[in-house]
Image (cartoon, rainbow over all chains, first blue to last red):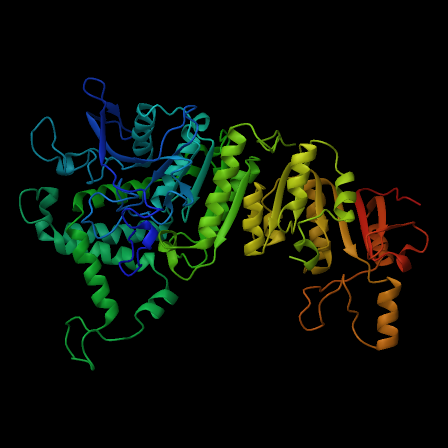
Length: 407
Length: 210
């Protein structure tokens, strides 16, 4: 996941703009203090657990307007607004979160949560292992999407929210959305999974594995014990470059770079960066290593590989049996990492369970990352859907739309 | 989306007639539901559980605005997502003639639903016949606003054709309603000449009406 650096920031979204969430404060919530550690899916225990989060807007007195935003592989809790007037960019999903935006902070209390296993303020492999006083490294227990969601549930409860009006996220964020809806059906009124799947495909696992191998083949990785020394920058940069290729589309790469050369008129017949697309990928790789921990990349990508909702109950239809939320499932026409057919599998299984489900395929050439870019279709779908959910939750209009006992 | 379904402002008589065929609280699927107006009304007024399928990008978003759960995509594919008898009524309003495989669509409608309500422009209408006869050109009017080269209508039929089709497929014609181009009701007498629009409610099984 990345925000394209070339996307201009709308005037209204700048700090002080009418549609900006404004200055926001990173926050943390710590729980599962020993001896009440969190029991992880892998069987190990983890505690204390710290989760980084941010909130935008106000929780209503009825506490019925909370919307949880969950992020993808390399994201963080900073989804909207600005941390300081000096920031170059707002939060990663600022295009849709703020006053008057689809996740309208005038109407909804938006919670943006980080994940455990990450390196953005939450407990992960780069955090200090309380037993040794040193960074965990590979001693950190394996965490799964379920573990991440169970930690988020503790956060949401801590914020005084019993039932989420909605939750949304793209890519791996979509995994968390589905996990929430299945694991806590009574706590989710609606769900908006975007550009995602009910299980990571073999292709997805394959691409993750190449990224992991690149990191682990870097001599600086040192079995994961590189903290305080030079980190495996080269390996992590390659992992990020591979990721970036999968987030774009063939059309978009052609449109953005074509075969154009970078800072030169003709071939140099050597192995220096020549093409613009090479230069772009190197830039993405290099800037990523400054802000992300290689071990977190390993852990989080592995948690994605393990995600498999259908396997849990025999089939996806059965996995969705208890679901009570209504759904807005969104796919992107040019996404080849999480192709539309994977969203349709989700839709099909929801429909088989008579879950009120809307499916929208965004027409975009931008590939997987399109959900991070301005898109009128996305805006209209999310804002319209949320407005109707809020109306229904508050008892207005549309009776009898709930899940029914089908024949 | 057919041109007929782009006018959300006022309920046309065929919408009202289709609505009148739907029992309160019914589970309804509308194929090619357009902007979702019919479903929104059924949900609002009759407490129905409404679901739609629509291929047009803009129309899908209008459904979302109305709070109508809609599937964005192909009709046959979307129908395939539902289990047998999941709906009480499946509606196909003014879209039959645009489907690539009408028998398949109707078969699927009666698989996922107990009844099907189908409305279509009657190609046997006297004006259509007269236009072709006298001008020698493809009929063109308010209900058939396209030219031969840009029409989405690939499978026109007449009232007579449709009745015959039902009989051959062992489909019971439970209700037949006929309307003029101005949405005024006409009787069954010479319906194939007089009706510009036909609405059929069909179910599985024989025993056709008169």
